[in-house]
Length: 290
Image (cartoon, rainbow, N blue to C red; front, side, top):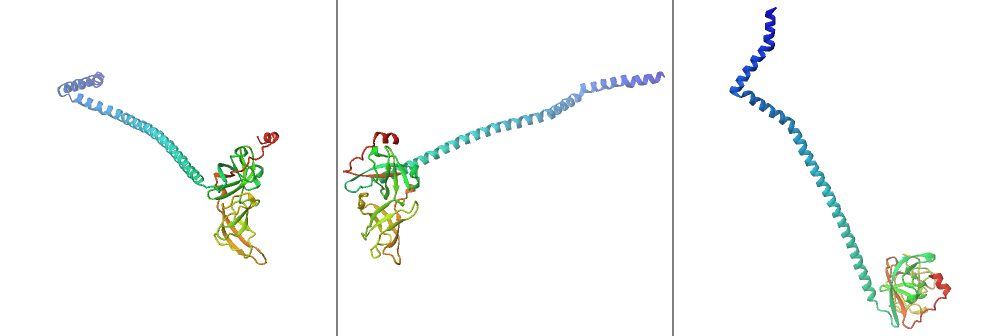
């Protein structure tokens, strides 16, 4: 029994002590355990710290890239806004250049003898109770000397005549309206006729051309000066088609207007040099118009 206890004490207590003292003495001489512990500790620390360092580096990289992308997006947005602004400015400059060319063209217009002219802007089309008619609305009225039946033209040709005038605005009955009849004559043939509108974007009928009258294809029609509305010699239309009809004393003639009303932005108002001012409105009529 005593032997068993001695063996138990020896293996349980004394043997570990002997082993420890032996290892301690061996380590003191060689330093092997210290080096092993140091290597093991560094490897363990490296295994623990390396993933954290990698995660930190990746996080920093992603964070920097995020801010870089945010900055890039903001810069792209600024550049896009600047580009849009430059495009808008270019459109404005082109519009101003186009307007300048139109104004130069208007200024080159030479009015007939005893007539003068004034420019006006087109501000609307087919407006108000006259919308059933082919009309445009201009920014000049009888305060500016505009009166009923006054000729409206461009350097390209006749536009129409003033239909109604208010103090500061007026409506213009276009030559394409069926209610507008313009006495004309062939520029070369000198044959008299009357143009009649057939509606917007439609050709003009050239009426009252005798069957045996001389008229040429593609001939220019100009105002004849009859009816005392338009001065003589203003271009109106160009002959498009001439057809002889059976059992008719007149030719069927179709012409193309020289002016496209849809594209009008500025027009010229013709005024007689000896034209007296139109009769002023009564106070009641003026209040209604105002």
